[in-house]
Length: 194
Image (cartoon, rainbow, N blue to C red; front, side, top):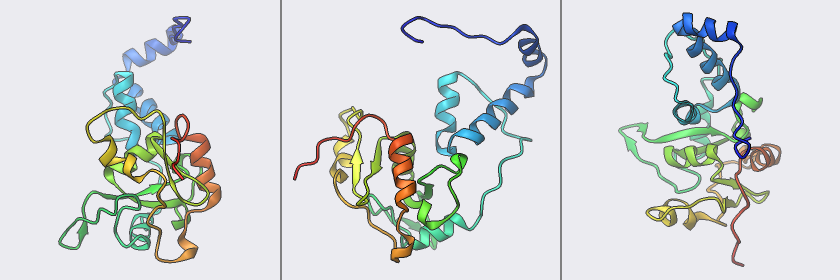
């Protein structure tokens, strides 16, 4: 579509409705984001589309509030990639529970679909910068470019197994790992040195 310089637009009645109701565009955008993308990507998508939405007053899809504490406990409150385990008193700082198969794609709020990841690795995981293989090794995309920080933030972990959860029954499900590799991961995995 880009090569052919394709353009799209709304029909006149839809455009008129959007022009006359300032909250309608926000409601539509938020519902689309909530239905199809993890929250970690919402601001990136809105920025790319040039949209500034009003988040107030829009109902959000319910999640299991115990997912985050269960996943963080399973991984002993440290990032499964870099082992970051910063705390402010008893509160984990910059540590999140990431869905391997996105919640929006029907991924369950279960430890086998979760990874404890620092904020940076969560965002990179959701963007498809890295994925896991069947042995739970970290595979970094060949699409990652840049100079400053690339080695320290991501490449040094390429080919390493994640720091797994405490119990074997909490290990990431092969079904969810395969989904992420197929649906989210960008490009091909970099070559693994044997």
